[in-house]
Length: 274
Image (tube, rainbow, N blue to C red; front, side, top):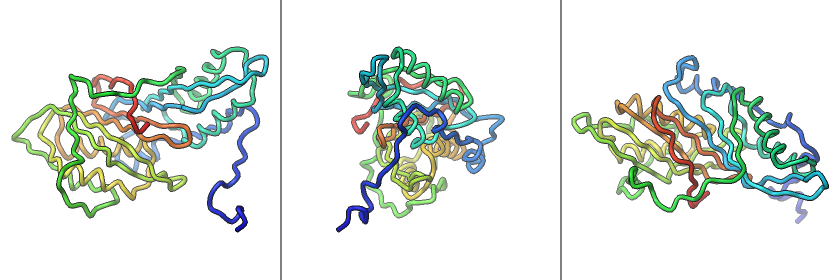
């Protein structure tokens, strides 16, 4: 069989030199309008924390340097950055000389800030892999619930219910969140962490709701915003935090976080699957 006939290993013409024009911004208003979020009055604070595992450039004498980076984009930025364009952009550094490592970090921060339309933080290195949940936020995993599920999309908020006679403060987590990339159709996998104070959420209904994203095509950031908005509307939560830690694809993973205003930012960390 001719390897050109295989649906694998198709040649991709990666950039030969640094090129900031490779970054492809997407207006957040496009996805938020579909969710029913008023761009002028966001119901949440938040950020998108990217981890870049494949980063290299040449020093002033042409010797390769390698590194990793943590990139933080505010949820208030007008644009998100499409992930494949970010991968191609970072690869454009591979054969380009820079006078110092700091020049590389500054250049990435400037380019991403311009693309996102807001100040983007860039730091070399990655947060540690979490060995256990923090003592002050013990999580209950709902994946072991004995429930039958037949709904795999589109996202169905009618599964969400809460008992307003029981007010609780708890953190729930599930590793069963899956959606699909709207650009490539590839699967996106994540563990989601939901912390809230308010009427006790029905856990079986929550699990069915999260699984209903399984055949849904939407960007990571928009999926998390949809979960946040649906939970807030359906459960009457007084305080709410939703973070998803997506598995790595193309040398990148993304961790969107959305929360009611004033909620403390979660500690940066990585899962075993990242």
